[in-house]
Image (cartoon, rainbow, N blue to C red; front, top):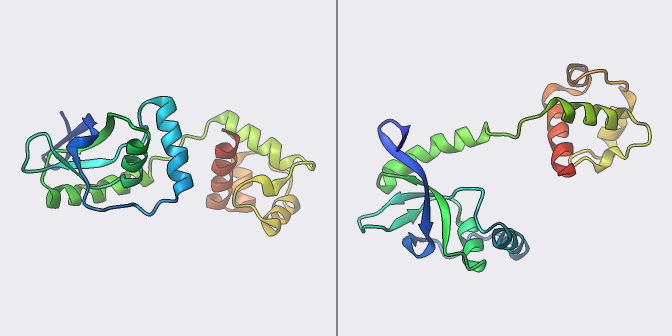
Length: 178
């Protein structure tokens, strides 16, 4: 097993849905979002995002700590099993470990490849590009981008538009293209 958090053993596991105890009735996720995820689960026959579970007093029973919408979509997709991240600890200790998992997941962003940067710079430097098609770029930001053209590199773009803002737009552009 993989060591995860100060002596707590953890690992990805394939678990039968009826082995998972869920204390909350519904996640509150919109029906349309659940349907999209459910359809994806049916097509792929497995989940990419791993809900986190912990052990319970019952053998082969796990308590769901995160990922209720994924669980709901898996039920709707009539999957028999889903992948979970199993923390081999009781709920209070596992919840403390989740804080670390949440922090790490915020750092687990998609990698920006050199070609992504080139494509993005070509797009924002092109006078014919609809800059508002980039998620998060409204008319005011589109004008800012146009006014500061030409962008010769990622560093140049970040210097002119702001390091974080420019990178967020690059990631949003990459996401919208996939």
